[in-house]
Length: 139
Image 1 (cartoon, helix red, strand yellow):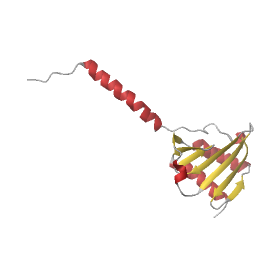
Image 2 (image 1 turned 90 degrees about the vertical axis):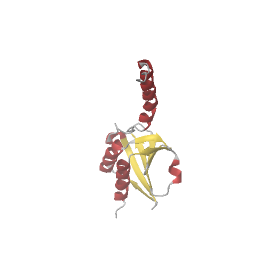
Image 3 (image 1 turned 180 degrees about the horizontal axis):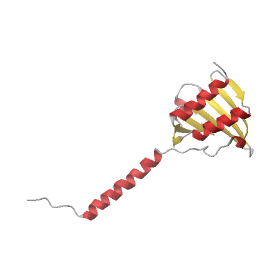
Image 4 (image 1 turned 180 degrees about the vertical axis):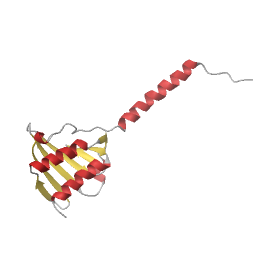
């Protein structure tokens, strides 16, 4: 004897509920680019501090342009302030914007800290920021 089939409305309800539960999960893993529109002209001045070795470098115009390109590629995901539990080198960029605002961006893989708020980040763009900063102080 064949088993009775559940009514189709219950099947559709299950599909809708499953989709509704999946949307927030998908959105938390989708990254955003906080500096996607940043241009070199937006940076009036910029410096980078590397800790360790406790060195600060002021960037010239060409270096600011390169930094703007690297920041455009930076991707952040969900908020995560656990970066304080990690050990390693912090690369702190201080950006003086053309509109007078001052922003800080700390590359601390696997985190980017934007104005004091930590976020999980995509590895490669964060590593590129770190390599850029370390290249400024030489081998």
